[in-house]
Image 1 (cartoon, rainbow, N blue to C red):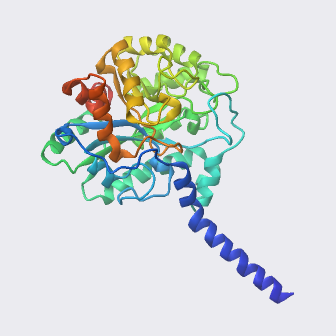
Image 2 (cartoon, helix red, strand yellow; image 1 turned 90 degrees about the horizontal axis):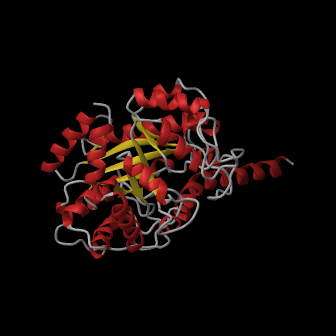
Image 3 (spheres, rainbow, N blue to C red; image 1 turned 90 degrees about the vertical axis):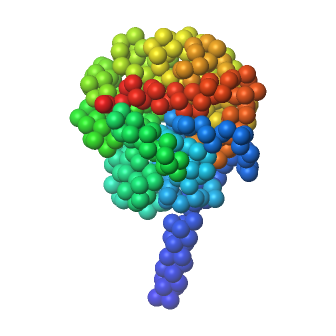
Length: 384
């Protein structure tokens, strides 16, 4: 019996080691694929674009060292440098229900808790959405601290302007910002907003794939609008100069925010129903309303957003938004590392430039779309 127990213990230990060593990487590789692998050819002026930026990337969710180039996933700092990427908004995903879909989800399950356990994260991450969200924020700051000045985290207008000037002299510099994908990680406590502000978060998506105490999700069970607490949250966000992200918000939430909130709004990653008609994407009326508010719409790089698997599909949706509300109100909102197959990783951004040229955009317009609009929007709306 002792021998059997010893053998069983050894087998369990081996299984545990294999699980914790291999499972996180296998999950990452299986979820964050690309349709086009490259290598990619740049046009003659791609590397002279002064500021390439993207509004949405979930790379902090995965157990990768972003200071090292990875052979899987979509974004890390060496590949940002290769792509002349100046600024990436790194978004914090803290809870995702099992079987997620764009139609209807409840909040009863939590895949990120299981992923945190498999990644051997701190036990505080396993059950607490606030702790795992704040932990991801800290990880980005830790990457910056270890980068020897190559990578910065931007939180203010002054920092962004200084970074822009510094990068003109050194194109190897890169930067990130922090956003929250779902206000549920505030854990129903408005006071927790201060913690995330201090952690560097500068935009918040009110909902993700399920309704929460603040607002209704486009993919939730009820799909309602702002709650009374949600209105309080908006007022406090406005006082801190934090930006509202309307991605994943229900139509009623979008309407409520645009009617009742005077602060800045963006949609960090989306498509448009005029090109790709599904519940995930913005209607013409929503696009028009965001345009009237001088908001910013980030167009994604995955099939559900743009009904295609290449840069041409994304460029068509960009053209649609630009024609409707102006070329100064549309940007890149990839959703890289968001557990979906993307057109390509960050090194594929030259393909977007080629596709935008084919859509008839001029070079100055392309420079706006590729990042100039994000820079201008953040310089207007970040805390000074």
